[in-house]
Length: 225
Image (cartoon, rainbow, N blue to C red; front, side):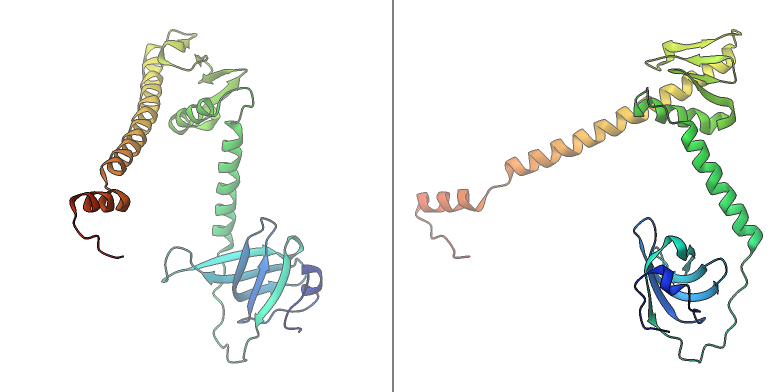
């Protein structure tokens, strides 16, 4: 096998040896480098064990479709001393994680509404985390919960209405709204306080030029930097 291949199309014509080190660029423009655990030529699927981005004790496992990758390179060939059999993948666990990832993405897409603000979409997600995304939906500009409670713009507690006069649900949703906006307000206040503290600290810190001027005025020698 060549030491490096220019494209994924050339690379998949070869077989990657288990234990070799391969680097490629994904369709998300992310460079991935790791040790080959498995490669299926028919599906062009490559399994790499990569150094974890969070801890040295663990490894990240990437399943890559080489037809969607570019700049595939073999950084280091296996020296032939690779004797350990790769661990078998738990396909059921992989399928479950894939299903959960797809479900989370679908839930996130449900919260999108081009006609409302990003703040309203965040509130939608906060409510959906409590009730479940299947119980929350957009009805135009309104957020509808359980098909009976509606929150209209500007999405404050005064905008909560129940078609069945369900006070329990209304009060619970109002608490969610209060908590949501209180947390945003406190976060904004913390940021403002930190910025003010930084400005105050900078204003009272003497500069080297002011110190030099003061020393010169008093006749004190100015130390050389």
